[in-house]
Length: 52
Image (cartoon, rainbow, N blue to C red):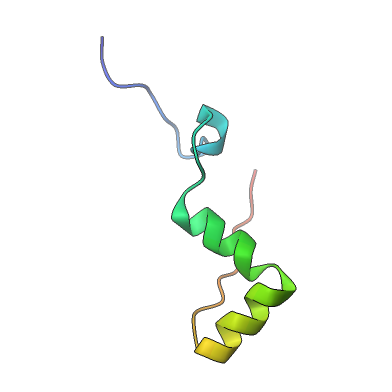
């Protein structure tokens, strides 16, 4: 038995786990309150990566 095989296209979502912090931040910054707060606080506003 070894470690589970994970490809670059397979994220934590597809393995049934809690989303990454980066995924949560990206989804938060996609909301109106998230955009407002990130701009107001000077936080980075990430762009979504293109998925396959």
